[in-house]
Image (cartoon, rainbow, N blue to C red; front, top):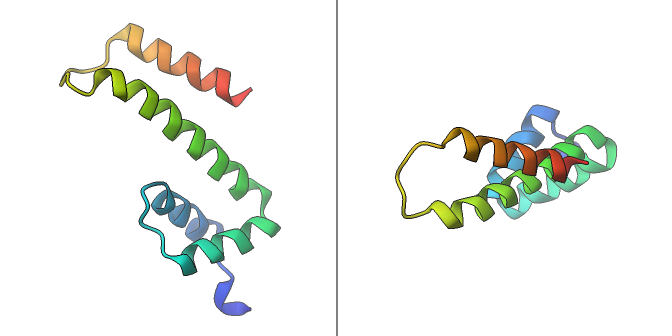
Length: 86
């Protein structure tokens, strides 16, 4: 069982890799085992998923434009994040 024990730093790295489909089955298994004992990392993972959904939803409308975010865009994203985190 020691082979599957990971630190919180390793868990967040695997979580980030998993968001982009780069985590192996073994990494995902380690992460799930870690979540049983660490609610903070589980919360981090859930927040990471929400942030990715918000970004993907926003970027669909802006994908053809190669410009910086306007102040209004930043406020919209900030409000969406606050709304999802409640």
